[in-house]
Image (tube, rainbow, N blue to C red; front, side):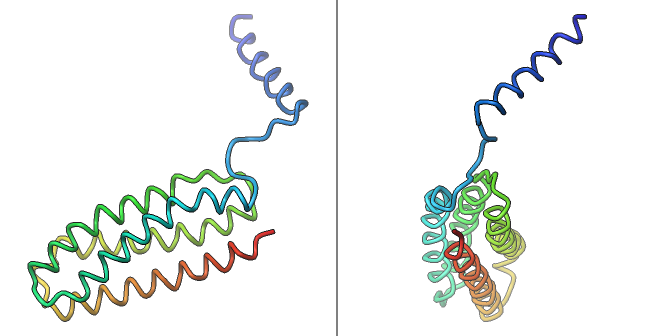
Length: 150
């Protein structure tokens, strides 16, 4: 009976929550999602600013310093995007677009950072431009999907 009591309590609590209309935790409206996404958008602005500085650099040491700041900024942006908990399936599908864009850019940063000083400057700058352009395009697609949410 001692092992059955906790199970019965769990079932009773679940039934009570279901009967009172309590929903699972997480974002369930597009308005809440837009509000929750603001933290990501603020972090994204910082990433874009640092990436622009890195791309316009003519000195490998300045580029390296910018990348050293860009990696933690990218991690903050990544954490902000992954920190949103979504309970609505339609919003979740939209959010997956954002996570894919953020994960791809973070993966790029994790790959380029260790060897940026050993890579010719033009090659690094071209790679950084391509990565940020791809990221921005993916984020634009996410924003369009988010704007279409009811």
